[in-house]
Amino acid sequence: MPKTRVKNDPEVTEENKAWFSSVIEKAPFNQREMAIRLGITEGSVSAWKKTGQISVNHIMRICEIAICEPPGWLRAQNKEKPSGQDRAKYQPLPKPLAEILDSYKAQDLSLDDLYSLLQISGRLAAKNQKISKLESTLEASEARSEGETKT
Image (cartoon, rainbow, N blue to C red; front, side):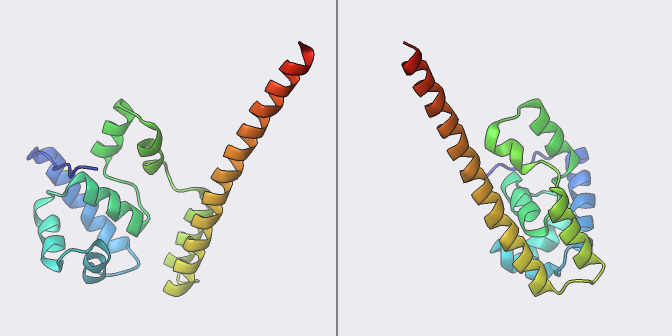
């Protein structure tokens, strides 16, 4: 995916600044840890907070790491031109994931517990996708078989 730069639109950069400050405040880790997870310098994270000029790719990575939704302008842009895999990235958190995150925020879970549960939920989601694909393939195969036996 090519790196998509945010335009110097003052409304977008102001929204990004507010969004990113909120993400940093709510995240289960500090600014330095976010920089490490993103593979960038802490100075870049500080610059994003000041300028709001964050690439779309970095916004999406932040959303994955901090388990949050992108800023409103990006969600709106996605609604205008939805596409399969990208559309899934902007969906609200599934209820079980939201509950896990709420438990962490209420300090009922440690950071290690949070990561473990999120990894497990990710694996389960991937397995559910595979099962759905297999079911679809099986249904299509059965439909073909029924069609062949009728002729």
